[in-house]
Amino acid sequence: MNWNWDVAKDFLPDLLDGLVITLEATALGSVLAFALGLVWAMAFRSPSRFVRWPVSAVVEFIRNTPLLVQLFFFFYVLPTWDIKFSALTTGVIALGLHYSTYTAEVYRAGIDGVPVGQWEAATALSLSRGRTWLAVILPQAIRRVVPALGNYVIAMLKDSPMLALIGVVDMLQTARAEGSSSFNYIEPFTMVGIAFIVIAYPASLLMRALERRLGH
Amino acid sequence: MTAGLWENWLLPGVWITIQLTLYSAAFATVVAFGIGLVRNSPLWIVRFLSGFYVEIFRGTSALVLMFWLAFVMPLAFQWQLFPMWAAVLALGLTYGAYGSEIVRGAVASVAPAQQEAAIALSFSPAQRMRRVILPQAIPEMIPPFNNLLIELLKGTALVSAVMVPDITFSAQLSRLATGESAEIYSLILVMYFVLAFVLTRLMRLLERRAKAGIGQFPEKRGPLVTRKLSPSKESAQSSNLITGGGVQ
Image (tube, rainbow over the protein chains, first blue to last red):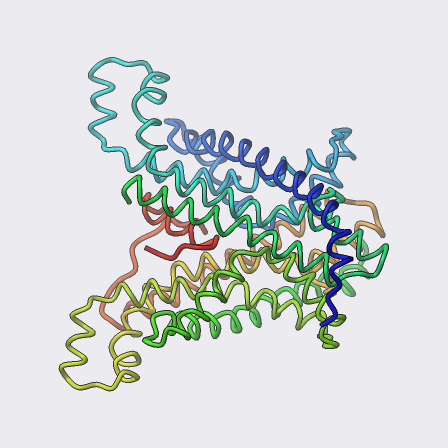
């Protein structure tokens, strides 16, 4: 083991630049995943099977195929259809879409957990469909699944290095660039690995604490 | 798509992906049982080391670990693995760490009276585990292991980044050769989905047999790959993909 602290010190600013991009991709991806997942979950409950079945099939397909391949699909196929995004935007879309299929299941579980009486009460009070969802069902459904959603944010963080493979300059990409320009592989890659643990571990402890607070 | 690409890259790529999945799953199972069963060891050093292992390997990203094994290991320790074995090692260690929490959770969920009854019958600790605890715990592990297996299958796509010629790697080559991105990527997405579907069917068969062994039936489920879970199980499943937790 020949660890060189000078290399580590030189690489640190690059790592922090990469960290900003990694966090940005994770945050934007989470927003997309939370929003899309809710759309899927509500579509699962649609009265029309022409909505339910196609949405279930698409969600099932996206969930059970690799994120990396979906990333390549968006990155290489969309430009041929004249839809052009930056690498980071493409990455955020792929990450958000992939994890929306996980959050959809989480929302669905939360919605299924709301007692039937709540739906019936909303009907009895002749609330509109929109009011029933927004004022009665979702506040109760989402509360109990917040920890699960948070867990998927952390899972997303750990999948975000895949974006380096389409050229997004996140933490992993800064390490690859450092390696190919100076042949210093040991320090950059080790530091990136440690950085993920340093972020993910406290975040997951936070989620555990939240889970206990919300009383599971 | 030409016949040459099919014969020389894509079909062998499918075979490499299947091999990777099987080897990594076998290795991960060994790690999961090894670590999962000693997490509650009476020796604090064993508990500490196994806990440390689980937190480290669940905390870091599988892709970063793969790069680390492929690029740092040869330089730092003068120990270079074949890309294929580096990939199996990375996947096995990562998913083994996830799996160890499933093993621990399932063992903990066996009714305490079973353990006590085995002690009252003066079974040795090994007999207790082998004859009483595991036969009841294993059927409980199969559904979460199925999820993990699908995650592992999806994870094998990462090995294309360290030059293992799996499906994704072959697709990259085919894209460079023909430029038919849409067709190639759609095709391999379908291939991955078919593999996931087949693995799920096999795991359900295994679950049926394991449950029949202790006189239970698996719950009825639709034809989908994904299971419909309750809020608390959804939460357990999601926390199983990250660190610092454990199956409730």
